[in-house]
Length: 359
Image (cartoon, rainbow, N blue to C red; front, side, top):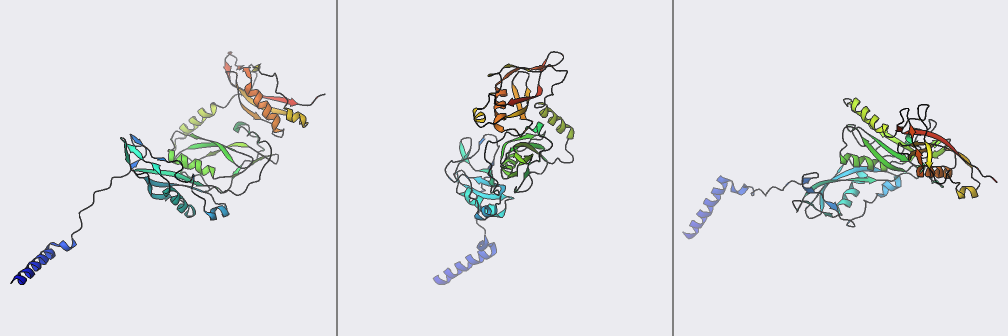
């Protein structure tokens, strides 16, 4: 009877499970994980990469080095409260670079982001650029000063980007902007500045844009079949419904800050007031080598009497002579040009400076 009772109890228990479905009852749900915080939240102190915790940049894949492949993209990831990075997702990354970028970032350690003094998970991003430009000719000698954007002669062949990755700037046209930069004689890019239109460019897009430009070696500009340095400009595409009136006005206001009228009969010309010495000194290195020439320099005299925007109008002259003229002009103080009402105004002037060796 005791065994029968035990068997009956088991049977009753099993039949109850079958009716209630207890054999298939799911486990209780685990507590929901809090969503990572986003950069820019009020009171959030963003995470910071710990210097020395990983290499300064991800290593270039050997295939990319061999084929001179460049690329730029960003990695979306989460910095956990313990300082590790996970959930790493490359955004529009070429496959050849994606794994290298992910492996590098996962090896890095961060000071975690904090909110109200407590470490929290933060969703972050980082722009990654791989730069493997083709070899460019090595140019010796002094680096010539770049042409001022207002004074580039029409006969200058403009620089052209080569091997940019991707070929065009990584934006979709909804953020109107102009990017000014210098292209040197060896194709390097430097001194990049971004002029936004009325629509502000998000920091992430601007960061990506600047990283992209750094992947672009250029064929240098040429003047009289010689490579020269120039300031150049990229203007992005504007959407069809963009308020052109605002954009044009913003551009005019910016250019008005650097534009200056040339001297005319309506203006009293600026005159040197305090220049030491009274003329550009002959560079001793040029004198010893018998270097002579005439420098045709253009420059702007500001209402305060200082000189800005010194540029060269005859770039065939030895650069050492122009550099001397430029340094002398910038150190000078002028009486400013004045209009018919006697008001000090900006004025652009052109002046020759001759260097010749006399007995």
